[in-house]
Amino acid sequence: MFTTAFAPTKPPIDFFAAIQELKQEMNAVILAHYYQDPDIQDIADYIGDSLGLSRQAASTDADVIVFAGVHFMAETAKILNPDKLVLLPDLAAGCSLADSCPPQAFAAFKATHPDHLVISYINCTAEIKAMSDIICTSSNAVEIVRQISKNQPIIFAPDRNLGQYVMQQTGRDLLLWQGSCIVHETFSERKILQLQAEYPEAEVIAHPECESTLLRHAKYIGSTTALLKYCQQSTTKVFIVATEPGIIHQMQKQEPDKIFIPAPPTTNSCACNECPYMRLNSLEKLYLAMKNRTPEIKLAEKTRLAALKPIQKMLEMSHK
Ligand code: 13P
Ligand code: SF4
Image (cartoon, rainbow, N blue to C red; front, side, top):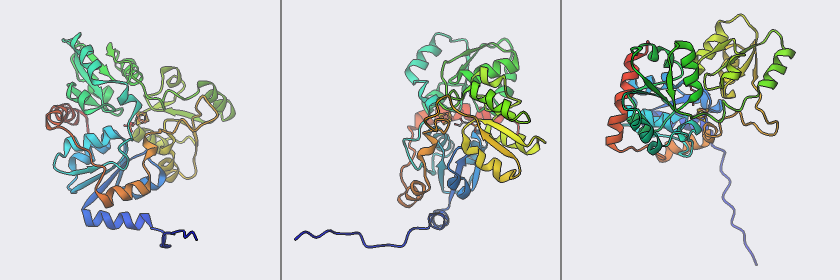
């Protein structure tokens, strides 16, 4: 006779309550990016763009940082906090933009331009940060480039689209690394124009990681935090949002009477305007990471120290 062993029935875990409890026990802070699932955004202590999250990581007095975002973000938190435990719910949450700039190839590129200052977008690995002079984010890239003497040649890495946007805003000629984000390069210009025809009152708002062909249709271009603020301040009621749609959760919370339409991707068959890396995190993984104190971000001290300098430089150079 066969017997089948069944796991005893247990009441379902209330992940919200369990995470709150662990947070107290561990003296942990949960930092989340706007591209995370709504549940994660709702349980976070702080939600922000990359600059805001770096500032929070630099100033927290928690013992444990739970980073609900992607690897380069949690890594930045670790660079700023070597003695804290930094947890990332899923270590596979990488970034196509960071991957588009392999350290060895970038070192060779940099070596051929020894007179250039290196400004790197924060969406890169610690190894690339360690080879950079200044880090920037989408909210301070223009501001930082404007502070550099006009005679100083600059390499801008890894995002060619943000680099193009900075060139256009500052009138500077930057030597661009040809990296890009799979999410922000996926929006369909044709479908956005169709939506504009359907909703003539709508404004297109876009993240500067989008291609210039798309940015030229945008009424407003900015980091995730800047886009959110713009929607609050604008009298417009309908927005076509050309960035990862996770941010629409906050937009809708803050402006429940306005309409936010996610900019459609070129293909109809998938939700590929959702960042597949960001979306690897879940409330369940976040709970387990806290409970088991793993997966943890670890970093060689030599790389950390070299990567810390350009991050500190960015924090000094960007206005509060
Ligand atoms: P910000 O939130 O800094 O605008 O960056 C967007 C992004 O692509 C994060 O991966
Ligand atoms: Fe990287 Fe793009 Fe995802 Fe941001 S949205 S984490 S840049 S792949």
